[in-house]
Amino acid sequence: MTWVRSSSPLLSLTPTHISLLTSMIEVVCNDRLGKKVRVKCNGDDTVGDLKKLIAAQTGTNWEKIVLKKWYNIYKDHITLDDYEIHDGMNIELYYN
Image (cartoon, rainbow, N blue to C red):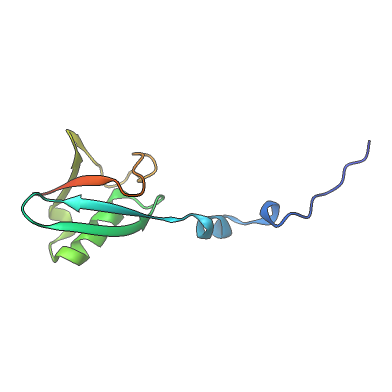
């Protein structure tokens, strides 16, 4: 039996190429006080990165932002993929 090496371009991708293939997701953050923010980010971004993007749009300090879904408070160092945050998901926005 002979093995043939595949010349598929997907097999020769480096991690930087793979990260470029990941699609952007859009997260909707609502503070229920009249401010609703739509943010585009990657799934491998951390919650802290998402807070910084929200702070850039709202004009608040990113350290004062608290993101929740029901009673779960999202931690800054965990990625959005780990929390299973997907495209079009709504997150509650609070200020600390």
